[in-house]
Image (tube, rainbow, N blue to C red; front, side):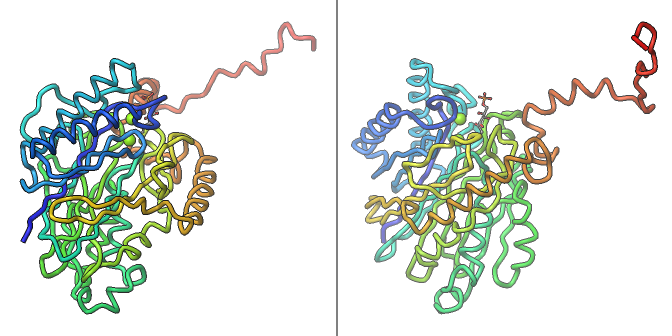
Length: 383
Ligand code: F6R
Ligand code: MG
Ligand code: MG
């Protein structure tokens, strides 16, 4: 039995014309680095792409999760790409790389990572979702629907192999030391929703079938927790297995047909619809958004990646995109107001807003302030 690890490690190392896309020459350079690593047998296979301004390294290997060599490869690749970006004065070059020195794992250093070790089935279809201008809580809604909602996933009702349900490993991402809880669906569904509804605090880390089979993995890295200030959103990635006793690929994708509202968008400070797009449309433009997600489908074969297929490059998602743009248009009109568009004050803690509010703070008075009334002073007027 082949035990293959899929590691998706990503970072915003700089982008073209603002926070829009990773330039082609950086993608090409990253591919060259990955190819060399495959030739040296550090990894078995790879695919390099971008979700907006995030460089995405999809790697397969036999070294397990949290492997130092794999994480170092990703880190070194990001560092070299950032350096190349700096030479070309690419915008925000090196943005997510919060340290100069690698310390064994990319966790806590800026990049985001989702990893999963699988015993390959006879056929192993997977989907990799990569989002831009949002945060890990963005995957709570679709992953819950995929693995726990029978109105989304017909197999939960129809297929005896799914009938036993799935369990969610949920992380409290507000805790500095990672803190997890495991909850089973359908038995604990209401408790699961009580947590997952708080998308800024509780995010799905992993999903298992209730017999213990790993089925999904999500990046939960929070940049501001590391940097102590806003340095871009923690644009998340997720790996999802499909079929043969798991939700079908169509059921997995069905969960993205509602452009649900996520935190992120402009300056990481707004609520916006998550719009599923083809890679060609993976470029956040309007008000730096709206937040977007791409999906690539692969077959994993003896540690290699066969594919991909661009899963959202389909007219079937046109209606979702149309709806997303209508929601985006509506929300934009609310401008700087909460609720609705701008995030609530607590979530703005790591943005630049507190600096503005600090300036106002000294001018607050316990007495109600009444401006001097000059309107009745008519001396010198024509009357
Ligand atoms: C969101 C994001 C952008 C920037 C915005 C301001 O994750 O990266 O929306 O926050 O474009 O960018 P700066 O501060 O670089 O001028
Ligand atoms: Mg950026
Ligand atoms: Mg990004």
